[in-house]
Length: 284
Image 1 (spheres, rainbow, N blue to C red):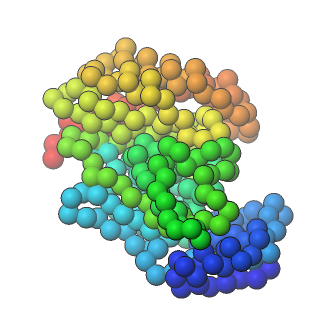
Image 2 (cartoon, helix red, strand yellow):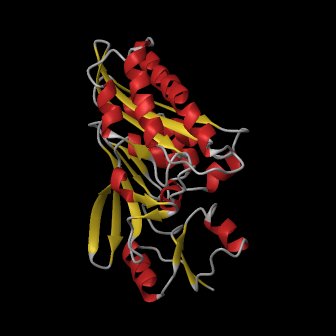
């Protein structure tokens, strides 16, 4: 296995294109484990550790945020992002343990596309846009469209995720993330990421996303619409939770049966929506 250390995106893309089945490596928290288990055996690894700019998180004056794919999960966890974007920092705080977050990267977690991981549903809730660069140039992919199946994304084999962009959070927006897990640091049995925009106690827009309940983060337009133009009363939240429960197709594993996962969805949705709503009422 060859290991390459490019210093520019163009060089990294060229190396990836020149070696069939090559893989990119940044923090290595998922990839190295898969290599050790014999699940992957790529002929070459293209390290992104020395590519300039990939480890920067930039907050712009208009409230928008740009982060390179090699930003660590620890950096995101401590970023203190405002409004609805707080869902991202809160999700990052619950990834595994500090040693993992210090090395694991945001881009690595997104490209690994494990539906039980913390970051994918949070980035869908935040309506992030992901920049991919390949031999034919760059393109922008909505987080909604990025996750296709278990461990499968919309990235082509010769593309690299380089940046994630987040629009300015609307005034009155709040975010929250809740993970139900067997023990601290475990993957989610079920997780819920919520981004709400509130005005005078009325929910003007909502994005509710489940983790560990389908082959990709699960979001429904109908569930979001059930919360819009309401005061997030019990009936509206229950309706949204029921719609998500009906749409869920979780797997059964050591963390819970498929039926158990479905049963706890409405309660977790209600808890996370209430946590977000309460933040809108907290003193500034």
